Length: 124
Image (cartoon, rainbow, N blue to C red; front, side, top):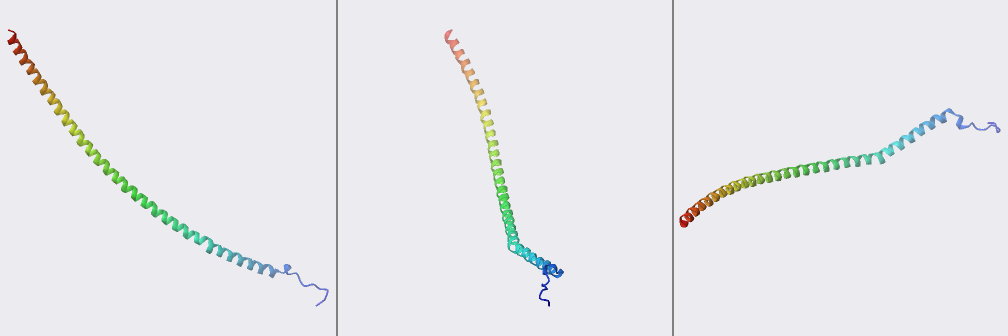
C-alpha cells in the first residue's frame, strides 16, 4: 500500500447504502412494532372495555326507562279508572239531587195548595 494513498471513502461504496437501507428498515420496523405493542394495543383494549361498559350502561338505562314507563302507564291507567268511577258517582249524585229537588218542589206545591184551601176555609 502506498503511504500517500488514502483509504477509500465508505460513503462512495454502494454496499454502504444497501447496508444502511437494511439497517434503517430494520430499525423503523422495530420502532413500529414497539409503538404498536406498547401504545396502540393497550389503547385498543381500553377502548373495547369502554365500549363494552358503555353498552352495558346504556342497556341498563334502557331497561330502567322501560320499567319506569310501564309503571307510569300502569299508574295512569289506575288514575283513569278512578276518575271514571268518580264521574259515574257524580252523575248518580246529580240525578239523585235533581230527583230530590223535584220531589221537594211537588211537596211544596201540595203544602201550598193545602194551606190555600185551609186559609180559604178559615176566611169564609
